[in-house]
Image 1: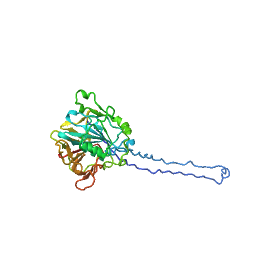
Image 2 (image 1 turned 135 degrees about the horizontal axis):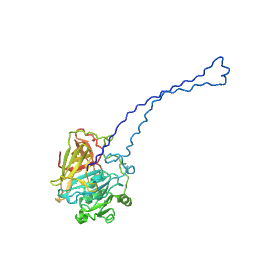
Image 3 (image 1 turned 90 degrees about the vertical axis):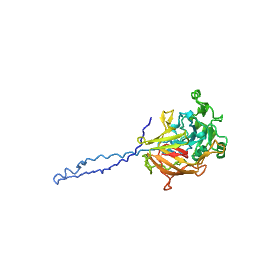
Image 4 (image 1 turned 135 degrees about the vertical axis):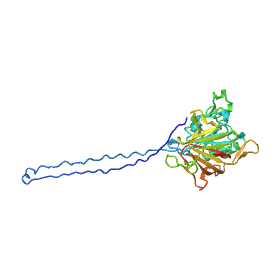
Length: 369
């Protein structure tokens, strides 16, 4: 269930040997035989010493393009400098298991009404998004996060108050499954799930259709930041040891019934996720969700005046960064509706170095480790 992949880089030392080449050549003459040798050239063949074999320089490993969201190498060259896609994912118990989310570069998790959570899966390469299920509706803080990544936003329905206002105010490029122009094409209901799931838990997005729909909609595909890295990534491919104490487990709690637990596996150098006490699986692959990086961000979360919808402060706060079995105390901030999160060391104020790999970002008011 746990795929083991380690990316190791090694420096190969080379010794360049100098080749020694010697030769001698001379013409010998004798006074007595000079006349007969006038028209002859006597040349000794060059004597070569043995030349040591020189080891050919080893070609450097070409790592290629890297993913601007995760820093991982091997990224699609044609997707460099392009916009990502963010998709709303249903995370209620009655909708599990989801499928397709294990391949997301980022997973954001934030509480919604009733103490349940909703996920937002982000993919750096909009041409390589899998089929995702189940798709759910928008709450206002999710498009604010997506907008900071300059992502094209996909959802199925919305809160018709502040979420609708946010989407319209920011004029976000988006696809809504409630729009008949996209239903039964980009969005559809899983016929098998309809037999035993409530209809609202059967919505799917066919990721293979996204490039054509994006083109037809006339959405901008070039990233407004030129495809710059979303974080300050560690050099090379080896795991960078972050500052802070050893910590191999963290619980990000959203309510009594909804919490995410991450347990570190030193062999794979990843954190494996549990959903409220059970392994969080991707039904498409049969694999447990895993991440190189876990961010637990503390903020103010409270009910709105209607006593139902939630307010989530995205301006900033303190938090924790987990990677490689260690934890680093951080501060985080989001300058405005168009800015991405910035993570700084709580002690120095300097931007932190993040390991290359997939990220989970949980935003809550309750973290323990």
